[in-house]
Figure (cartoon, rainbow, N blue to C red):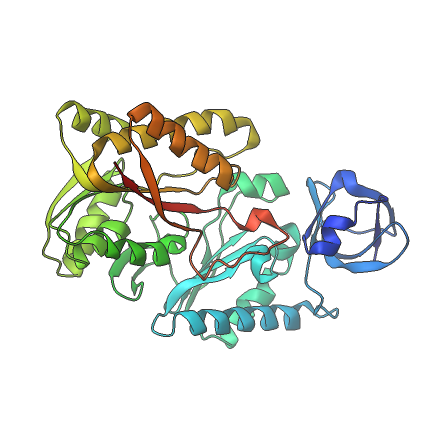
Length: 389
């Protein structure tokens, strides 16, 4: 096994629990390793810090496994997956669908597994994990009884790792699944859906908004498959507007609304969200609860300034639509936008919209997206509920 030695003082972050070693932190390497091989990591004094997947062509040169790794990756994968499954079953005992593996947070670097009943959708963004993916597939098949396993990767992240921008089918077929988040059912066509098929990260937050929507007029912007709006209707909202730029997602939202036999008054609107918000403002329209859950505006550091302007503009428009003493429910899933940046955009938006805010609730992603306290990269979702005056 090749050995990687860190430069002096580059070990502090690793010793605190961070799992990435960047190329500019490495002093030297003893031995040779192909991309995807497991190498041992040492500090400058020669103390072993752990082992992980090596990739000489990536900015992240080493992705560490946790300390339980003993040289048998198949056994390691089985332990990590079964530990992760037990955690999800603890928090969601009545659900059969959730994020099963959240990459580094579950000590499976560069791997995401979303579970849809007996179907498992993978995203693989680590060279070493791709090299060993059959071990993962076999655990899902043999230990969890998976019937369908396939990948739906984002090419951008595969490219960063030097992996081919392709997907794989491992067993079974890609088809449709009807899942539930504990309350609402969703019909998902995994062959055509966005990302892996469903945004599990907002499930706990969708539950929370039920506290504020009874008897209210609600706007669910960037509604995707309808999650927030469905929970609003379930909790007694008098009116729900489902809004998305994708006609396919609006169709999905309507289908899911019907699937759950909900009875609120509704409208389903396909269109540009910024344009809809502005036209609604111009028409003097108001909502008691405005919920915005946009896609990531900041895919990279380079796009950060533009993203902040976009979030500020979006929140200003949304705030202008909220009735007196109503609620703004706002999110950001951009990793590069930190919590303080997120709140800065909202307070700036409130100033521009001449509104006052009272923070009622703040949260991150759902419990099937654990975080590592020493690794801020694992905490990407910001979710906040404000009362608006």
